[in-house]
Length: 103
Image (cartoon, rainbow, N blue to C red; front, side, top):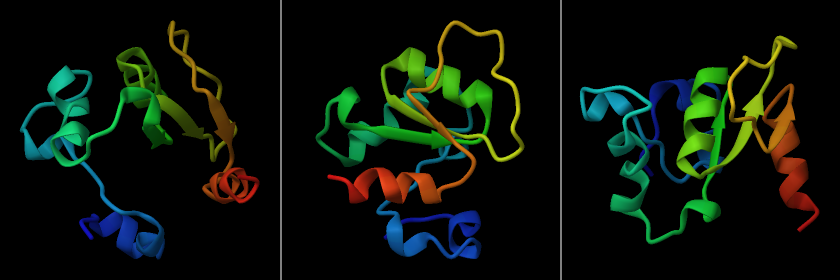
């Protein structure tokens, strides 16, 4: 398992197989090489990825790259005036578990 401290401290690390960080490349999103990190580890298509973030700029960047995107809108924020919107939105990660329970 390769997770980060925020994931471990939130006690959700048992639900997450791997996390990826732009910091490992010393560049920032929306550089394509950041989103391509996932393909170095997994043989998946873009549409098989669920990108999760509470940051609307990250949401827009990941969606423009072609990922499925889940926005954790914890503070009931407004969507940015950006051309790419999330596929799903909820106030917490709990909604993601409910999404997969139905499958």
